[in-house]
Amino acid sequence: MKKKKIVLVLMVIAIIIVFSLLGLIAYNNLSNYSNVLKVNWDIKLPKTLVKEIFNAREGQSFHGDGIRYHIFSYKEENENEIKKLFDWTTEEKETIYYSSYRESVNNWLSKIKVSKENYPNYSDCKFWYNSHYDSSEIVVIWNWKENRLYIVESFL
Image 1 (cartoon, rainbow, N blue to C red):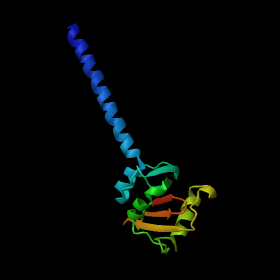
Image 2: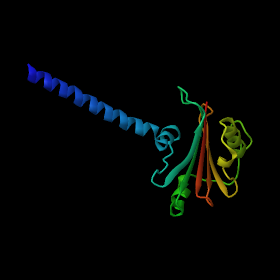
Image 3: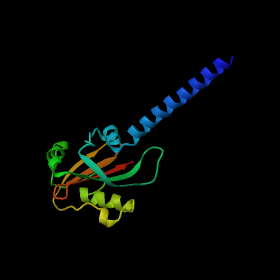
Image 4: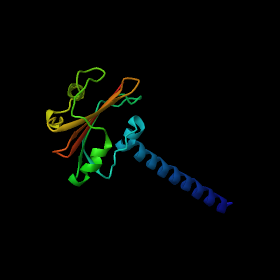
């Protein structure tokens, strides 16, 4: 009887450990911004090439809506890989709600109270933009002189 109790306790401990590890792995994968970009926008951001140096977001939301902002740096030797990520453009076009990418980004960053020192430096930038059927939008800004990627998302 005593032996059965010990085996049962050990099995319960093993199950708790396994589920804790699985939960930790799932949390790390879901909280990794590269994975979030993949799920939301089908963007594969090579996390080995870039390093996140700043992020801000509009409060927590059950549905994940709101504004998210991330700044990444990369090493100069990775510039060709960054170049291949998107069909970059220097031309600023209209978004769903604003007359230009810059106007969208500035309004979104103002809304989440990002300090001006963390705004993109728009000189020497290229842009990539996308939107969803639900009017969610993303603007990616690449400043190749500063080796920076700025990613701003607005989810409705």
